[in-house]
Image (cartoon, rainbow, N blue to C red):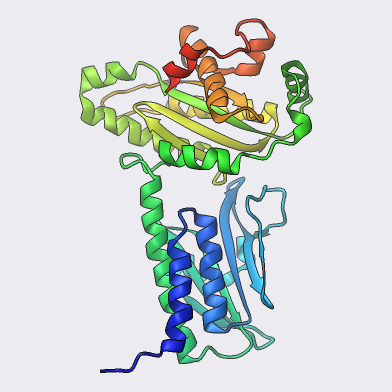
Length: 354
C-alpha cells in the first residue's frame, strides 16, 4: 500500500473543506484561488470574468492573489476598468478550440496556465495561474485536481440556482441574492419619493432597476394548445429575455409565466428603451403553433426598501399595465407621482404577488 503524505494531506483537506463550505460563486472562487496559490506554490492566480457589453466581449479582473495578498471586486460596475477579449489570446484560443486548459510562456519567461470554466457551453470565468518558471509535475497535479473540484462544484451550485425548464435563475436564488448583493444604493438616494423621482428624470443619473414581467393571456395558451406548447412558449420567452438584456443583468423565473429582471446601472431613459425593446422583441416573435404573444411589464427603481416592498411596487405597476390594455410597460414612481397609484403598498398587494 502506498504511503500517504500526511503533511500534504492536512492543508489539502483544509482547503477542500473551505471550498465546499460555500454556496455562492464569488466566495467559492476566492476559496479555490487561495487553494491553488498556497498548495501549488505559484507566483500569482487571477479569476477573470468574460462578459458582453454592447455586443462585444470584454474581460475584467474579479479576484487576484499575489505575494500572499488577495484582492476582490465583489460586485463591479461596468464603468470599472475592462479590456477587450482580444487582449487575452489565451482565452480566445480556449473559446475557439473548446479547450479546458491552455499553457503559454510569455516573453519575460513567465509560465501561464489558462483554465476556462465552461458552463452551458460558454465561458464566463477563466482562471489565470502564473509562475516564474515551469510548473513541476506535483504542482500540475494539484492545479488539475483543485480545478476539477471547482468546476464540478460550480456545476452543482449552478444547477441548484436555476429553473429546470428555462435555465434562468430561480426564485430561491433571487431570495438568497437580492438582499445580500442589494445593488448598492447610496444613503442620499433614499429620501422622499418626489425627490427620488425628480432625480430619476435628470437623465444622466444611473441607477439599478427591478421589473416584473407577465405573459399576457398565458392561461389561454395552455387551455387552447396544451401544456407542451405552453412550456415551449416559456422556453422561447427565456431565450428572448437572454437576448434582450446584458450579461451582467440578472433574469429570474418566479414560476408560472412570471419573470423578474434586475437591470444594473442605467439611466431612466435608457431603462425605458431597454424594457420597451424587450417588449417589442416578444411582440414581433412568431411562436410555433401559438403565433403572437405579448408581455406586460412593471418596473421600479431599487431603493433601500425591503425586497418585499420593492417587488410589491413593481407588481403594482405590472397590474396597472395589465388592467390598461396589456402589451405595455409601466413605471411605478411615475404612476405614483401622477396620482394613479398610492405609494403605500397594501397587505393584499403583497399577498397577491407571492
